Image (cartoon, rainbow over the protein chains, first blue to last red):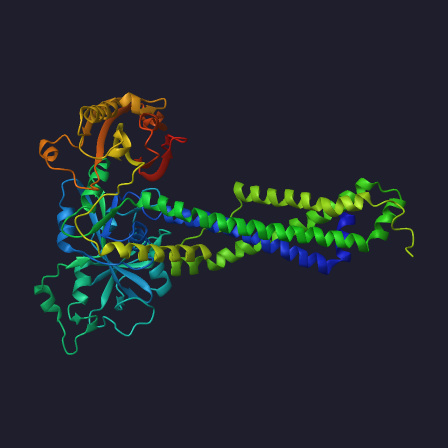
Length: 418
Length: 181
């Protein structure tokens, strides 16, 4: 009965009620959205690389090296020489290495030069290996392997020819159009930036830049395919490389050795530790975001209670009539509380529905442009906790109007005011 | 979305900071902060490897070659303290047997002794420990007791690796327990 009375009473003031619902919905949306994206971004980052002991690149900040080598965010500051790479890779403590060479692109997707070891050694998620949905790893000079998303979005199949663009960007005027690549394999989806990448061999990377100088093609100069076979295609430099060690015990000593490498300024990072340090740095920003969303929620709940409080002025008569026909003050109190609760509940439901749809819509954009993989929205314990807190706050702030109605004396509304 | 921009913005700031350093080349110097020590911990199978590194001043109160008997004995005391593994670490539930202890005491090399220490030259103590732990799955926490032994150590930057997880944490005297799980 309470619900019915409250519902009709709200219908009577439907425009203010709808506006209040929207305000509650927006604030709940912000609060839940921030929490969800924060949680998912962390998950997505930490599952991108696993089983790699060290990542080595030119000396830069640890976070920068991690971001450009694994997440393809930002740009490398410098390359490292092939000699240094070989020397470190031949260290008996090193079990395997995955070289990474970045710089070219295909329709906005990054091209990564690497070796077979990438497909064999790279792990993501909980130690899951890469696998092919079609074809296999590159074997010829101009073979390319596609990440799942690249193949899906651009509709490529094994055997299709591909032209790579020099540099980054979706539209490029300098194409490696004299050296078309052929799709050799397509990887299964991983939910990591690996899906957004094209893989070619280091030699292939070197070959397409043979007749280039200073970033542009040399006019008239063309290296024919037969010439290429005769050339030494060992790269001069690579962007970074990943290391797997024979024994984990050696991680810190190898790291120290690389960081003090005398021939070239190098930086070796432990990916997991760098991520932890990144989260520690982000902590204050996370807290700021959370504080802002809590303040937004508080102000909208305050708005809700203001709305109810001002409605009580209009409803003095209605309340008085209820009291006159025998309703107790408690009944009036509950009616107001239930109205507040209804508005909040509807607001929360609207927020969750909009958030779930919104995340479905932006999922692919986030993954493509930023390499961040956000799972669809699902209600977990944390969500329930937040919803519980919102409802509790509604009750507390709802005390202001409901207590004021509770205390309103019986004759208050019945007596005509002069 | 905002979050992502924050990461991007942050990384640009970091790139800027790092660029200032990248022009400075060899020789490399390790970080040396008085009051701060570093612990590297690796748990692989049942072997636990702990590496401790601290500026000398944290352990003995001065950072130059000992000039009198008192300072020499301080240096020896520090070495003995670092060698007594059961005084340094406490392992919850699991039993960890010390297998190997290596302590690098500075200023003990004759050659180094003769030359006068350079002004402002930083020197570190290094110690590494190898333990065998049984049963290793019970090893959840390590209490680091270095804070009470060397009160000059204010915080210990701890990097640990265990069962494929790499993580970092900062321990302080009020919070000397490292949780590994």
